[in-house]
Image 1 (tube, rainbow, N blue to C red):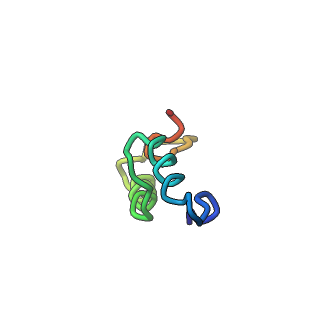
Image 2: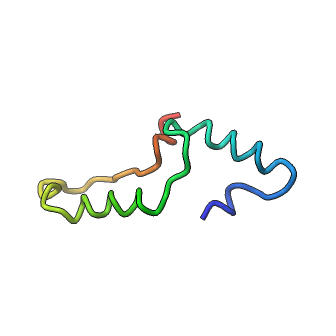
Length: 63
């Protein structure tokens, strides 16, 4: 899913490290991260949640 964001080539490792450095959790998101957020929204625990934008990005937008 990140192939369009992180180009291949000689600098790929350096670019990947620079990208990860901007994520406070210091790791790429996994499909399970999205699945857990989705399950929360489907669960009774979120029954009072309405009209929310749930950002699942490891804190990327905070940096």
